[in-house]
Length: 296
Image (cartoon, rainbow, N blue to C red):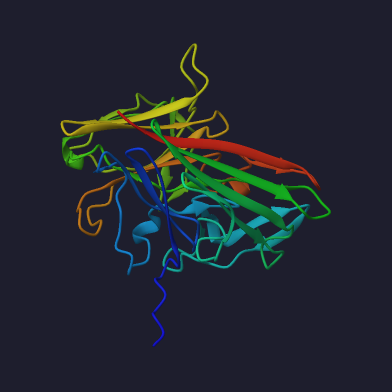
């Protein structure tokens, strides 16, 4: 008898001391992260697909591209419309891809996938994501290398749903290292960035917002976002290239109800059209960036 494959493929568990993480073969997603038995990201059942993008790697663009259309070297590109209800392309090209395993140890794993030239995407990219845990938490390292013949811009992001230990989402306060917010309608920009004080008491607060100007505090080298509640605290840190963060508070995460996604991104929604925050890699060039999760 053939055992059915889970929707996210093989499940890779890594651990170090009291810290554990589970990473999926499909999409190289983060399905679970715990410290001392407490969850610091929302999980989902192994027999389910990631709900609302939970844990997913978003490359070569995060969030949405309006109508799936953008222009590269003067030529219009038409991506597959992967958000049909809104008519947009969403969250990149690798969410449903089988990654191959590279280096693997007890406390770390590296997964690799290539983006082929295809309708809407003109230049091949070699990508990898490394998950590593230690006593302080989780570190995620993304690498993107241009294996084509021409330069191409891209963006990258991730989609973890943070959890402040045993705290209910409504009992938490979120503090972002952000200076602006980008007005959105149906997930797409509709105006310039405006200043914001990025601290939110989450009870009765509904967010699906893009925040920019994410930068390290004076004397620091990392961007830091913090979720605090009576049952714990968790920090999402990122290198300065992750100058944007999307925050999303759905009310129907399986087994949890209200949840909060805190998504580190190198660029805002529809960046393939606006150019904001895009990173360009020439032939043979590579980019590497890191973010991570640290329990309080």
